[in-house]
Image 1 (tube, rainbow, N blue to C red):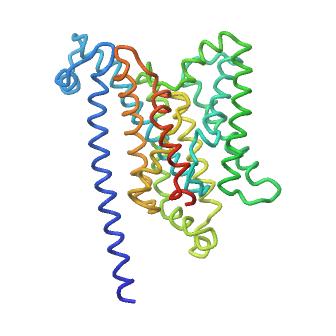
Image 2 (cartoon, one colour):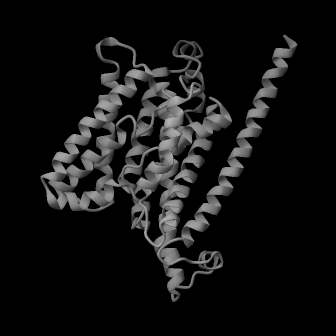
Image 3 (cartoon, rainbow, N blue to C red):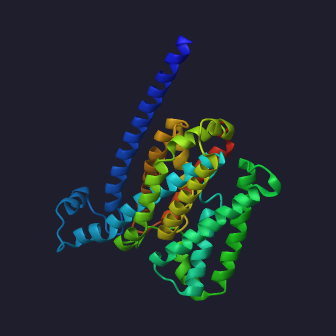
Length: 346
């Protein structure tokens, strides 16, 4: 008994140290990518100019105006949207016990996209602040439909059933979205720039609209760490430990809808960030959600900022939209995860 009692604290200490190291490295990468990202673009700026604009802003300098009015909001939006997607991804994986769960894979982004294009076509909404509530509604409806299909006829909502239901719902919703935009040229022109997934042109007004929802959702999600740890042991064990399993799942689902809905409303549907962030963070922390949730949040922010920066740098002075860059860099990761035996179950 003595070796076993001594081993647990040692293992926990090692996990905490590894998580701290990954957290520090990820934070450093985020800072570097943010500074480089502010300097990259059709008008490249050196690092000293970027730092000067951030530290001692001069409104009479065109270069400072580019940094503060255009590129800084873009980087901040990337941090916020990436953090929301990373946290939504790990929540979905933990609740569904599906290692391939992601707001894009399970139809959440598709649902938000459909209601946004309806808002544009039917209600004439043109601002992201107006998209927000429609994106929430679409994300929520898609989540309900996917879960209902995955647990139809009293069957257990297994990871495979949920994944298949999410794929089917995404295909159907995508078809409906195409019907709307092809029948309305004005809606198509307004929707196509949003649908590709981009941080371009997102100013402080858009950031101010979605930031309160994402901050509140992140803060509330951190309170679910202990119940999610219990659920990771199995529903029966969690219930025996006093965890209210159904309440925890509902709270996590609401958080996913808010996080994914707000992120999609702000930047359009961006895939693979939630999937990649969750697995990178889980590699460092295991299923210890007290460490997993904050680390996935940081990793998601870093992945999106890095993808956006690389997408602009590789084709400079042109620009590769953020959603496309995330798909190009995230696609191989997704394929590797599908082929890996280590992520067959959570």
